[in-house]
Length: 114
Image (tube, rainbow, N blue to C red; front, side, top):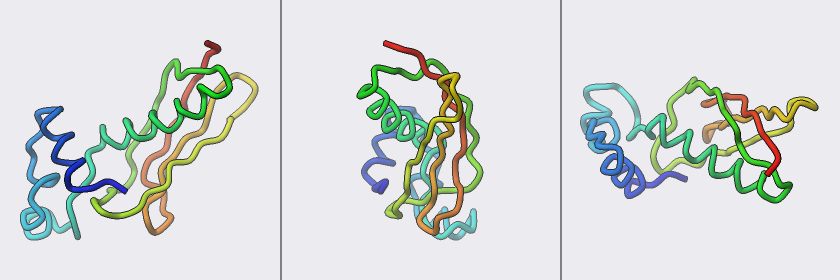
């Protein structure tokens, strides 16, 4: 569950001070979203962290990834990070579901042996 503190820290780390990540009033009143939006690059960071943790257990690492953000994810809402082997080539289907179970991020990761 991404927190306001995580969004603030990621904004500082990436020098991204856009109000949709930091100012709930702006996000609701100007952009029409229900809450602060999680950064697209932060979703990729979370996805890769979970995937790499799993792959390390089977002596693999992420060699490359292609992904697309499909729907917004919001602060203080649960998200589910998922993945499964795609085929025998070492590719993995990866995705993130929002709190309603809808698809928010989808991608394909290529892996290699350690």
